Every structure is written in C-alpha cells, then in structure tokens.
Length: 317
Image 1 (cartoon, rainbow, N blue to C red):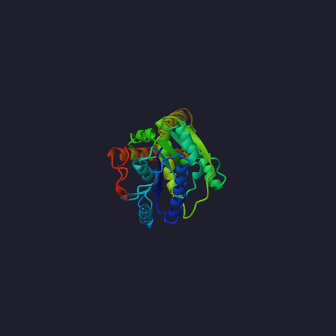
Image 2 (image 1 turned 90 degrees about the vertical axis):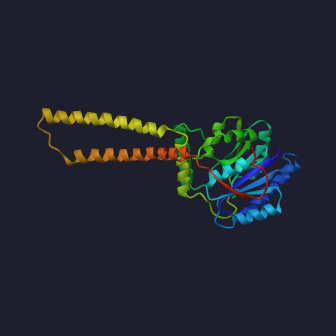
Image 3 (image 1 turned 135 degrees about the horizontal axis):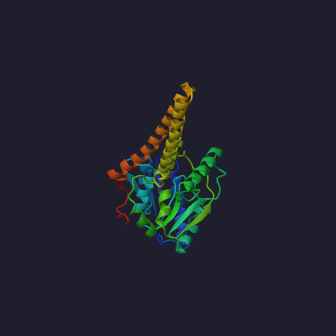
C-alpha cells in the first residue's frame, strides 16, 4: 500500500530537517521490505509559522520528490493543521505524528501490519509517563478519569500518533464541526481499532508549542465538544439549591411567625447571597462556553484555508 505521513509544523525550523531525514529513512526501509510502495510520501503542513519553517519545507520538497508541503493562510492551531494534512494526503493509509519525533516512529511498521490485518484505525499509545513531570502526569490521569465520568470515549495516553485507513478518512471528512478535537472524534468513527504501545522519546530540538494555556484550552474542547453532562450538573445543582432555599425560607418564616427569636443577622443575610451568586456566575460561565461553541459552529466558516502547496497533486477525496 501507499503510505502517507502527515506532520503539522509550527515554528519547527530547529527540528524539521532531522525529522524529515528520519521519516524518509523509515519510508525507504519499509519500501525495501515490501511493506509500502516506493511512492509513499511525507506531508508537511505549515500552520502559519513565524520563523523560516515554510522556506525550509519548500527547500526539502524541492530536494525530495516524496516530500509535499502545504501552507495554511494563517495559524489555525494544531488540530486544524493536522486535519488539513489528513484531508490532503493521498495515501491508502495515513499516519500522523508531531515534528519533534517524541512519538517513536520505530512502531510504524507494527501499525502497518495491524492495518494489513484488518484494523482501520491504529492508535499509538504511550506505554508509560515516567518521563513527564509529576504535575503533568497527575493532571493527565485526572483528565482522562474526568472524561470517563462524563461519558467521553477517549483512548488514555493517546495523543495524535495514529494510523487511519482510507475508509476512516472518508468518514472523518463527514464531520464538519469547527471545534475540533480529533482525539475524541476518531474513536467515534467506528471501524475496527487496535493499539500499539510505544515509549515516548525526548524532543529532538526546539521547545514544545503546547503551553499550559493551550493544553487547558484543548482539554476544555475535549469536554464541551463531546459531553453535555456539565449542563445537566448545573440543572441538578440549581434544583438542589432551589429546594434548600425553599427549606430555609420556610424555617425563617416559622421563626418569624411563631417565636420571638427573629433577630436578623449579617451572616444569615450575606452568606446565602454570596453562595448563590457564586454558583450563578459559575453556571453562567459554563453555559457561556457551550454558547460560544454553538456560535462558532453555526457560522460555518472554513476550518482552514490552504494558501499554496509545493505539489500540484489533487487533494485526496
């Protein structure tokens, strides 16, 4: 089969040349074994980089026929850049990975074997998180646990290192949402899936593009794009507070009518106000997050715009 490898790139000039070298060597080795065809290729998607990443991509594409560059018109974020590559690549199967090569490409052959055996989607799953900081390891575990509670179908310890067959890619193209969270979307496609375990490597060079703020944003997308449970929790909390408020009101009325102990107190006045005000603001903020996503979806704006490509290939259907 013809294999395409898709790599989204954002300010990756420090690592890109070595990344391309290693991936091309892998493709050559797999072709020599008869696992893939010699015309298998590598797609580099520039996500509006501010350094010389695109110039480097053009140079690499000019030197190697099996390297294709795709330039987005502006920065759209990792998930949209990845989708642009997946929808453009013309392989019978497509493997996505990051430019830093922390995902171990040595297991690509195992992924291909699994696909040949009949699995349409092959997830690359980290064997352990021993190389992460304690904070990142703890937050990742809690996040996956929260998603399970909320009913979101996710593969723990899986990022965006995966193989998708052509049938899965056609199915993915049918999902038009703007709020893109591929880690939650891919498991919804169905098809036969399996997992390949690997050990995460150290970054070749440069720095991570996922700051804490970006990670938090991606995490919120994962929850609000696939689960309405937080809204139901708000409704349940509102109902509970209403019942408690009614009970307190009956008690206060009873004290007022049937006893002489009705001395108004500052605490009994201010505490309920602050408690209810805090819950209301929190609820409004959460509802607002969902409304913002509805607003983005109904506009139906393009998820990405390809400015130019280094090849005249027709985008795969």
